[in-house]
Length: 337
Image (cartoon, rainbow, N blue to C red; front, top):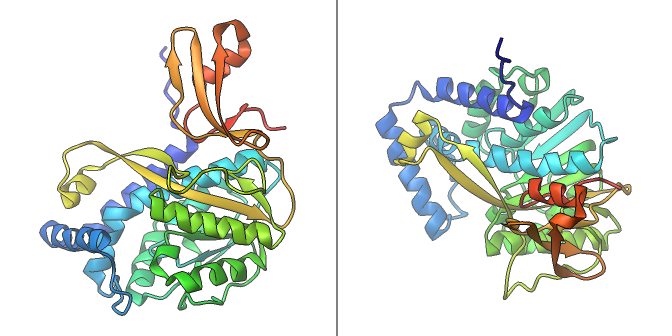
C-alpha cells in the first residue's frame, strides 16, 4: 500500500487561510476586486497618501486581502519559524499584533505556536477589522477565531498591552520616518519577543536596520536573523539583508492579480529581539547556496568575520550533506548551539 503523503503544518495552515479567503472574497464580483487590486498596485508603486486611509472601503479591504495576504502571511510565517527554531523553549501564550490589517500575522503566529491563547489585533481601519474578524471566524485555531480586534491608531506610543509575542509586520513603511523608531521602542518595552517584518526591498531593509539599531541600543537581545548584536556588516549602498519565500497562487489569487504564474516569490526583511537571551545562529545564509559537483559555497553573515563566503566540500561528509540541504535564510550550521 502506498503511503499517504503528509502536508507540512505550515503548508496546511496556509491552505486553511486560502480556503477562508476564497470563501470571504466570493461575495465580491471578481472584476471589482481586480480593479481595486490595480489601484493598490499603483499606490504601492507611486506611494500612499498618508492623509487618506488606504483601506477605507469593504471592497478595498477585500482586494488587499486577496492581493497581499497570502504573501504577507508566508513572509511572516517564514520569519517566525526561524525564531521558533532558535528559541525552542519560547512558547507564547499571549500575542499583540500591531497594525494587523486583516490578520496575516495572527494566522501565522498561531500556526507556528499552538500555545497561543489570547491574541489582540490593533488596527485603525474599521473595514479591515470587520473583514479580518469575519475571516478569523473560519480559522481552525481557537486563538485566531477568538482574537480581540481593537481599533487603534499607530502613532509614537501605540496602545500595546504587555504580551509574550508582539508582531509588527508591513507597518513601518506606512509611518513617517520620525515616528518609526519611537513605535519600535514603545512596543519593545512590554514584549517578551518583538518581531518586525518589512518588504525585502532596500527601503524595507533600511527600516529594519534602523529598528535593529534601536532594539540593540535598548539592551534587547537580537534573536534572528542576526548572529550578533553588533553593527550590521552590510553596507546599504552595496546590498541589503533580505530573504524570500515562494508561495502558490490560487486560481482566485491569479485572477484578481491578472497573473499567469502559479507561484510568486515574496521577499522580506525582518528582525526579532527579546528581553532575554536565546541561542543564536552561528551565522546566517544570505543568498541561495551555490551548489556545484562536490562543492557548496555559502554566503554568510557571521559574528567574527562579518560577511564571508564559506566553501563546504564533499570530503567533509555530514557537513557537506547539511550544506546541500540548507536554503537561503537558514542558520549555518543548522544545528542550534
